[in-house]
Length: 476
Ligand code: GLN
Image 1 (tube, rainbow, N blue to C red):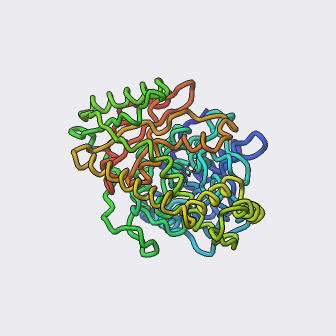
Image 2 (cartoon, rainbow, N blue to C red; image 1 turned 90 degrees about the horizontal axis):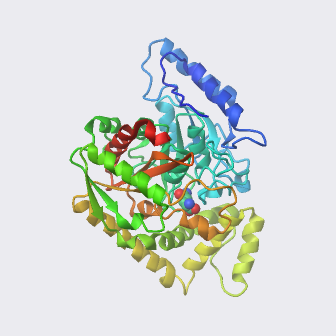
Image 3 (cartoon, rainbow, N blue to C red; image 1 turned 60 degrees about the vertical axis):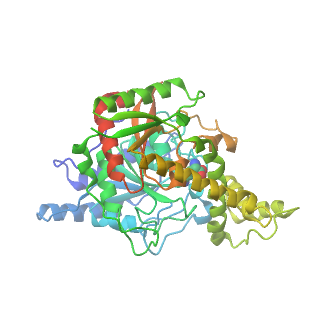
């Protein structure tokens, strides 16, 4: 159904590229049968930006790295020209007075924002079914979810509306939908990209991430948005290399670990087989494959689903004026539930606020939150030791399953389990990328490459090599 659009095709004007993106959006997005990937747009404004960009091109002025390339941003990244609702009724008409650093950097590089994409409310979810503005659909099979929480952005790239999009990652919200939609999704090292203007979910885990139709798209965008930002104290000043140079460097001599805990007996054997094919190809390109073990892996879901809700409950307190955490025993939780729901939050966000308040409350703090932090440190240590022992990259499946049907995971715990292979990177703060590695029953499968802190270059070397090695097989 979908062929890639390359807006950088020099024969096409910027004006045409933006018009094509809007036409494609009109064709697939709206209406009862539409994919509902994009929530807010302003075509005249985007067309004007395209006209200005084209005028510069015609005048022979040097454009930025992404001059004239249309893109969409997840609706939890603040913009001044379009609203930012975080997929929530709570912010239905909110337009920010300032814009996120990543949006400003993309504009300076010439990229043109054409829409804000659908997402699970406040980025909590794995399917984009928890958006207050209706669920998004997977462009490859509209009866299925595109993944989440950045499902709108992943779908917009997969549907050929744009060649890249911004998402956000707290526990896999870029890599998982990238895998479900058959596109590339990057989660940078914690501190690599400014979070200024990303609406906070869980501050110690959140990062802006990037979707691309290709590894190269994602590498170019990362070059533009990475780097220190005085507005985000957690952003670091490590130099930003030219990630696109990773393409030429290949994987020859790299050691790639295959952690046995990410290939449990319960894993769909067809997913495991596609992963092993991908590893074989990397080996043929000169990498060494090493069997490794990360025994803490099965603790990652419980740890994540304590820490993320705990941080969310304090971050979201600013929206509804309800003071959480005063009393959670007896009728306290029931009262809180009622107040949170009536404040305008949906059921999943309410669940997280309650869970978070509970694990932070006096009497439970040590048993849950403090313990989770201790185990988080062990998980991070396990990765650190693995990389220190000479493993350059870790390869795993991105998800344990294929894109599922709408409504298939109505039990929240089932939904949480889908994040098993992605939350570890957020807990450890390391970078990761999901690359398409093949299809099963027509549905995409993603392979994940994880690297050491700030080794995005190594991560991109692996991703470029994998994409090259699989060629068209990655998409069939
Ligand atoms: N699915 C995970 C959650 O619901 C991750 C979300 C995210 O990365 N924003 O918390």
